[in-house]
Length: 192
Ligand code: ZN
Image 1: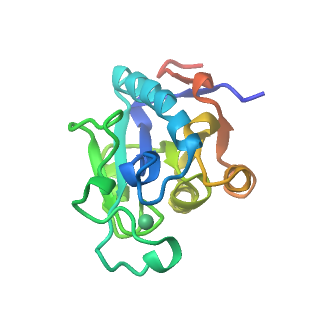
Image 2: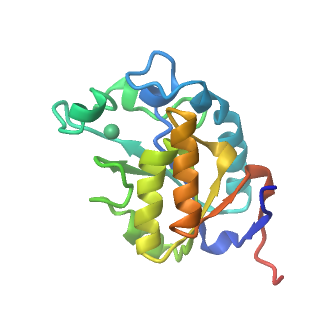
Image 3: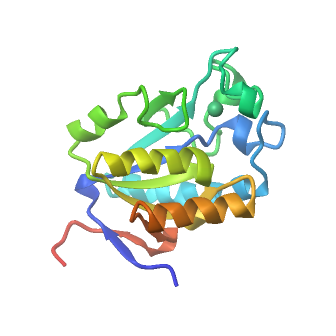
């Protein structure tokens, strides 16, 4: 059973990782699959709850130059300033803080850590794609920096069942992150 987690909104951020058209739409350059479409409404609900509870909201965007070396592994995707790199219409909010990243981790070469520290954030809720690549690498870097990490497993998706299981298992057993479901995350700053 997924575990119930109560999160203090004053020190938390919801980080929506790479929910971009190239990954989440069927005509995208690196479509993750139906799993990426299935998580959209659940992430949307979590975003709405986060806004109600004044949780910091951050989107990350995979953002590559046209000849990025990463394309040797994955082919061309999320080239800066193209439609494929846009955050999907279902989730995009122009008032949200956006971190553009060139590598798997949202911390590498970005101002994410400084932004979170400035806002007093210590707990990260990670959602998006893909579980065993950009979500995992971001979770690893978060762990190295001392953040508590929570991953609702119904709000992350991978290219395969193996990738999904592998990513979640690593976050839980190696990083000591909390794996739960979006319905089991509550926001409260009251003493408990
Ligand atoms: Zn990429």
